[in-house]
Image (cartoon, rainbow, N blue to C red):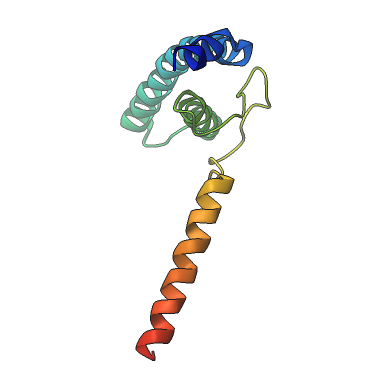
Amino acid sequence: MAEDLKQNIKQSSTWKRGLYMLLFAIFYGIAEVILFAIVLFQFLLKLFTADTNDRLRKLGQSLATYIYQIVQFLAFNSEYHPYPFGAWPKGEPKPAKPSKAEEKEMDEMLEHSEQDTDVNGD
C-alpha cells in the first residue's frame, strides 16, 4: 500500500494535471467575472432599449461553453484542455462522450434488459 502511494506521488502526469487544474481554476474565476459583466450589460440594454446585443449574446454563449469545458476538466470528466491550450468554443457545448467503462456498463445493462424481455415473453 505504501509503495503504491509512493509511485502515485512520483507520477509526473498527476502533478502536471494539478498545475493545469490550478491554471484553469484561475481562468474560471476570470471568465465568471466577465460573464457576469456581460449579463449585467445585457440586462441594462434590455431595460433601456428593449433589445439585446447579438454579438454580446454570442460571446456570452461561447464564454458559458468555455466555463462548462473548464468545469468538465476540473471534475475529471474530460481530458480536453480548454482555451488557451485548445480552440475557443463556438456555440453550445457538445455532450461529453462516455468513457469505455461507461459504454461497457451501458451495453451490459441493455443486454440484461433484453434478456428480461425474452424471459417475460414481451
